[in-house]
Image (tube, helix red, strand yellow):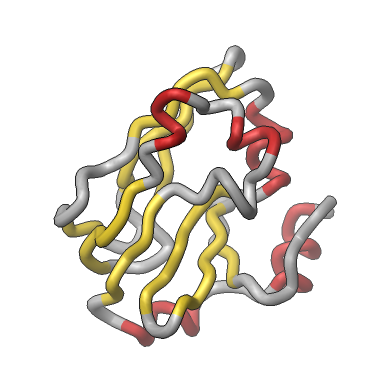
Length: 126
């Protein structure tokens, strides 16, 4: 599995990338491979507030619909509109093109609760 070491990970299979104090969020390679072919992505609006541990959207695959859970709390600054027309990017490029939202965090301490790539790999290999 491809687990970039510069990212942080949640138990719900989201990744978080620090971009100068704002955080880009998507789902992991492991998550997309478990879901199968993604056919629809539902994301929040720019300006929405999200809360750590709560749903901020969903992904629909040919197998199931899965909720997306916020790894951190904050305000949505940017939404990847490209996923609306090209949900397959989640399968093709989960860490590059298929980022989902960019968040301005409201509680930076929540980042300390996320896992390193090594910890995430240990969890998914159990």
